[in-house]
Length: 389
Image (cartoon, rainbow, N blue to C red; front, side):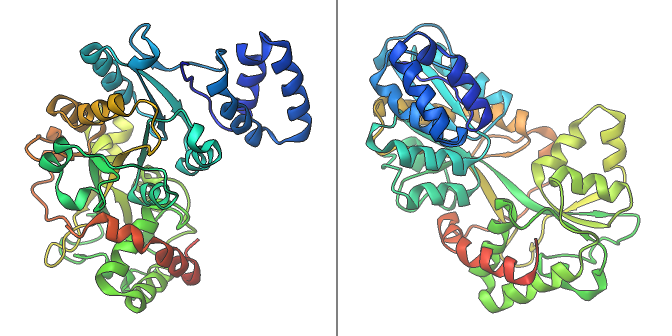
């Protein structure tokens, strides 16, 4: 069986209806007709995908690296990443090993986790790749991961960037930094995340929704460092200092500073890196008066998060999957990620992109991210209680 890419939701419904899995088999057509009347499309995709291990048919759109391969020379990747460099690395892996890479691509990691839970032991997934430790922890808590058992991981990736139980590892990491309008705020006026709660910044802070995992993980890191009571006070203070209702992504916060809608924003470092490396006049103008601050250099260091990968516990192609994960941690792959994504390489000794290297050598928080992720439920409750929507 070769696994194909299907996007959950209406696109999944459409691709299933038109695909060969349904159209080339009368029984499948009748089954699909019954299910389509009984189930919403978002669930229909999961139901039919669960039938795929028992079918020689294929449906939807295939995103595969390399040419034809035998079933044993395949690795099936469930991914919520959506970057061109991923295909570049997958193609290089196939060229180097002869192992074909099939990708099920869904934007939201939660949908992939639910799909894998529904598929159970019959899931074709070998690897789950996603962003943010919070998403990796959800998959781990659902019992979806097995042990990596990789010396490439343990020898190359610092302990705080991988799971303490050896169930996932970072392939890159990013810092949650503070951007500010340097024409309005002097260097040194803000030095920490905690400073964002100071009433002097009332009406000046920009940030995306607390429903997003990036802010949930930041708050979880504060729970880990400061405890619940102080984090709750911090969240209330930041909420009271907002320049507008939380909206948009991290790039939107940077653009809002440039447009004068606020003066301070919390963003992932790679978003700033993209704009700084851009050749467009608009992006250059956005960053013209913006400075970046790596918070908490005087104590624990700046909070970081990861893009990460785990080996699925019941992976049908476990040996190929382990080779695949190790390949992502090779120096060549790490360099590709660093220069394409403006993230920090997960493997020690690999140079970041020039624009990221220009950030200097900031101190990063080295508390194990698995410990931070354990505090995510508490952080979500705190953010909700504070009214940070």
